[in-house]
Amino acid sequence: MTLFSTPLSKIFLSKKTLFFFTILFFAAIFTATSQTSVLGSDVFTNVNSTLLGNHTSSSGHAWVRHPSSAGNAIISGNTVRDQNGNEPLYYLNMVPPTSEYEVQIDVSGPSYAMGPAARIDTAVNNAYLVYWSSGWRLVRNSNGIGTVLGSYVGDSPATAVQTVKLQVTNASKKVFINGIERISSSDNIITGTGMAGIGFSGVTSDFGDNFTVSSIGTPTSDTTPPSVPTSLSATAVSSSQINLAWTASTDNVGVTGYRIYRGGTQIATSATNSYSNTGLTASTAYSYTVSSYDAAGNNSAQTASFSATTPTPDTIPPSVPTSLSATAISSSQINLAWTASTDNV
Image (cartoon, rainbow, N blue to C red; front, side, top):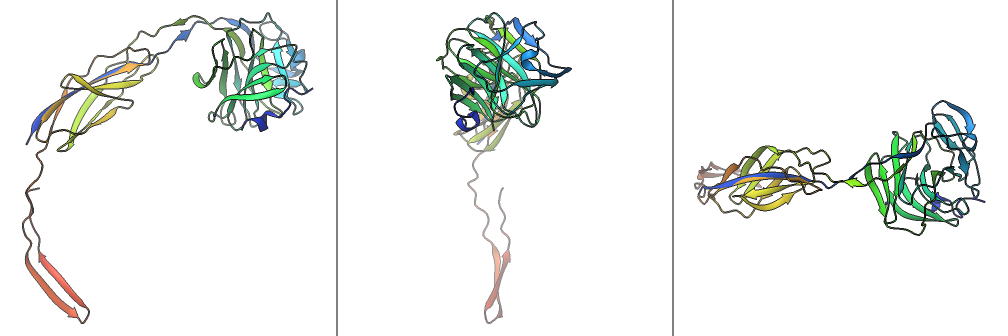
């Protein structure tokens, strides 16, 4: 009995006025760091040509092939591969994790179609799993039917080792590639606990090791503000526009954006380290400051103010050209020449 009634590769297709400017950089990137504990793990390095089902993990748990799987997986050196192009699904024989946990494994290789799996039902072929097939797929497989819940194209395991984590809770299923959330789904068709493991999708595949199953701890809030932006500059590019630029802030988690202040009042936000203030009055001085913020709502202090003055519009026309001459040089051509005009600008 195959794990999927339809191959996953087919199912998936993811006059001078002074203006003062202050830049307040606020980096409020909300992030919650989870304190986790490892429930099960395995390192496949230096395992020599052993069927995964005959191998005991580093945490002392045996690997078990799902009863509906059609083929075997073999480990050799530090790779795990589908031995004969089928769709095996393996799980650690352990006390089922809680209903909220995460599974992670390093993936690499020239051919690639496997990844972490969670909530594996040992009686029927139910599981959430992640694998690569021209892009990362988050799939719910239930009773032989695979449903794509989300996808992401990037971070190919053909070019580098990719650390892939599948996080399951009662409210969401999330996929992280190298620590960055790439796919999210609220699907909760498969409930309960279920085992953790790895799944393949019908190709002979090479993959890295470092498999872990971890609990999901209570998130802790980010209370550290971003650094203050530096090197603020303001340049008047016309009588109605001043362009601002600054050096980006840093943050322990990440900077979400910047707040732009003019004369002490916030006028805009920017996701990048530049901003164009338009609709200004000519011959006027403006003062600006900038601050940064992060996703958690933490704000940095504002920068020192920087001022720029919009120029006076040029209303003086050039002088009239003089000494115009016209010379016929043939039956079909006349050449013109004149003395150049002058202008105040």
